[in-house]
Image (tube, rainbow, N blue to C red; front, side):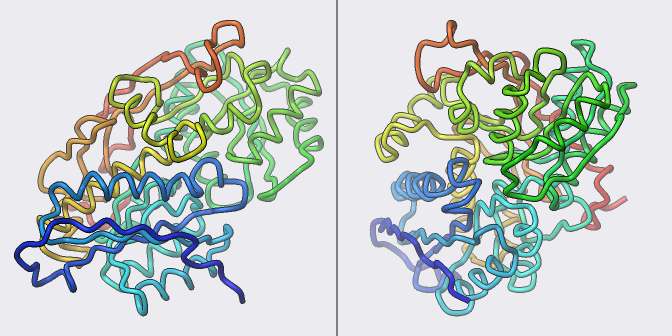
Length: 401
């Protein structure tokens, strides 16, 4: 099977100095594994590699003798390809950590490899909350978001607006199952109901049959438990059918890249949850300018900003631990809160969940936007201690008591 490996590589060399005996060749090599050409390209893709490069460049000032290299691979949304790439990286190419992953099915498979090989998995954009539940590992940190955080935030926001009955259209793999499960549970806790659900294969082009089922259910909300190209196609077709005039769409996992692809005319008023928005404050705008200069003017997504923050945190922890052993690096990340330039104080829990604030945004109307990428109004900030599933509820075997 042909694999598209090492699509691009960047090296950042720091000043020379004393040796780090437990970091071979004084080299930290991070593999950015994601979907480079498929439905998640705009969310992560080459932009995540650029974000990791920026993190490596910023780390150089504090790296001492350490060198950093960033390599990239395309898993094509197939777990077997992702595992093959990672095994080659670890066994042959000297990769010390893997980040991004972006696909939940791929992420769960890679998680097992990284645990067995005792290397750090920075699961920046693996959304399933099972990664810090039944699949938790002492070598894994889940950064940026997860399905529990998404479902909890959107269910609360829409329930507060009186939208209490939902129909789910879920992508038919691990992400869709987890999004539906966690959002439905959050809705039920509030007193709402799920009136029906269907599964659509990844890469579905025609959502008409699924949308008609949702329409006929009489649900107040059509909850889209998908993302990327699938989400974009579903929203466009729902708008074409005129469904959004009578039923509200719930975006359980949407990014600014998806909003940009659909356009404000069809997306206006949509509520969505993100961990990052480029126009939130001075720090996010500064990063966005640097990123856009290398990405033909595109603003960074939450996925890409999360790669920057998580890779920078990994590099600092590996240096502090003087090790590439995943258990030691993750333990170092758990010692004290991490100052992230975008998320503020980030705490890595025993289950591997990186905890930070989340935000609920409302998509602007075309009339209220000042131009491309000016897409969100901040509706709610969810504090870190409320944004993610309680530690005791995930079923992670690493959590005592």
